[in-house]
Length: 211
Image (tube, rainbow, N blue to C red; front, top):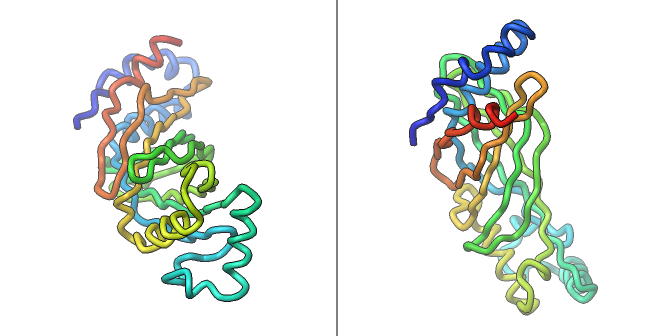
């Protein structure tokens, strides 16, 4: 997909006049970020009720301490699944790129599981790749309502087996960048999976024009 940000510098010319090189750098980083590519690199630290499922292979491996803990959590009407989804951001530009925040929606097996946001700035060096770990918590009982205890356990074990190939995951990502006093958000979401995907990047200039 091709970015259409070539008019951004003209749209934001007023910022350059009033705010100097600091805003010029933000504009350059925003332009570059519009051309960045994204992929889900890995999923790590998969835990259910605090038990690491990447260190066990089946229900029989959980032991006398872990299984009662998970069973108790299920009986309390909440079964927390926590994981870290590692997002890679690749900058194909000859100068740095930056993003200031990322709203996201996580789907697993085409089922929407949870939404959230990362509010930390991400800098990506020229022709480099930066990793953004996204901490995620899902209540499996709520997200997969009606499923049995064993079904939820199997779901977690299967996810843990994904390792460096989180093919069942889809992250819908909406980045935003700061330019001067404005926060410019993508108008839609980028579908991010295990292969690098470029942002359409089509409307930061539209967002500015609406300000």
